[in-house]
Length: 628
Image 1: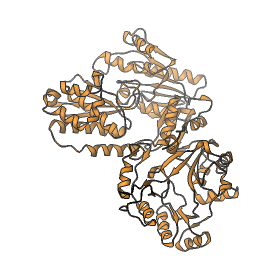
Image 2: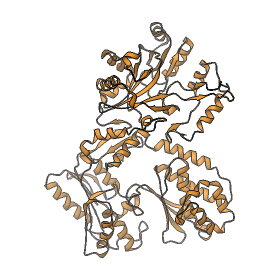
Image 3: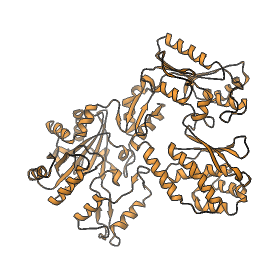
Image 4: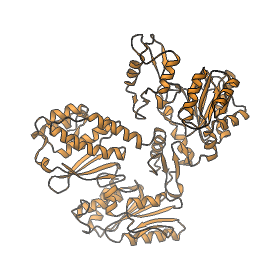
């Protein structure tokens, strides 16, 4: 078998209008075209043994076990590869299930189409599925777990984090479009002049000065202390001499952390000896020359979330820990804890697996323990010093328990720092009483606070914290959209696009439009050449000066990656002719009409499809459009 090409579809496409994230792999079965699965000795048994979870694949039989029945009866390898690619992603924590395999018209050649969640993972799954099916055919061993782990790593390296992802999902629920602007967490919500941007949980509305202040723990403490907010005593140190002076002034126990750290990196808590202090200082300096030394405040670790300067929710964070049973070692208890189905790799599940590192060994050493120690029954053994979920910690929602005085204090803190999306870390015995009275203190103020502990708490009610963020960015129900007129057809597209753009400009619109000779923003040529594909359309929709888009959408771009937008207000189809046949797998005029019909199918229910009634193939598109 040979992979001829792989396409990544990112918008409404030839295979599906609604499922916009598809891999299209053109596969040449070569000699396997003559070998359906029922002719390969032992193939059905081997694939069922390798993928027992594929029993859930109903396939065309419409019932559990349907796919395995098809394999027993005999099906072609392209169909099997489609199902294997889907199952690989599911096993790696990306549950997705749409697939379709169709012949290209050339003997032995098929388009294997399946959905993905992350592009790079989808491409990897396509290639791995071919390798796996070749191994199953030849009855050769195959390291399946290596592929699954590789897919997990790809997912964690490329996906939007849970915080950014929940904001994007909330925006999508409201019909607000989004575009990822880099391989990390920078995302554009909305189009043109109405766009807003987010990076993790920092928004385009967030003050840069506020982010800088929050990133400097000493600056934050000084501002809060000046405003009579309770903060722990502390000092900034740059040397061992300065560390000793700070400890003499503050006294043990202490905390040492990088002055501009995040996610608990480089933090060491409950330091009680000079030896521990030196080790902690060395660990903190890995993240910066300046470190902060603070009095260690006893109590529970709480995180308060304030959005648009209003209290939203609160969570109790507990460091990763195990509970002794009097029989087994700490190492065994950690391994058993990691078997909890709620724990996964990275951010794939509600909880993260506990890893053993320097911090773990330090925590155990302080108690005189090692990983081989057997703790007594019901003894709680902390294995991390910080309560971050990313290190295996847990969270409990305590939103309904927060005293009004603490709510007022936290909203005031957000205003003092100037953060419209603000995470506040408080150490206190509880939040039911004012922190100013129970001996608690504000430890940190965080820009870009993580949302995971609130949207997926280990215990308690999940909170839709993305909702107030989207409310802040798009008030009064705004969808962040600009009018989009999309034009397609075989002939006359560019002329039609130019005429519409001219009309819109004449009534005061700031028009961005794409044509076969270039991209124009307010009549200024920005890109020269054939600019009728999705990249050119995105160029217009990303432009913050545009309030009206006219987009010429040719066959090539639609077939290569799909449309750049999910919906338009007006779709125009000029005609369908036999030009460009044989390109991109389009061999008949009816297939060409199906490509062009994608545009009217994306029109909003309140929009219009303008169809050339003199062209029978175009006129027939009214049936599909009216059905949408």
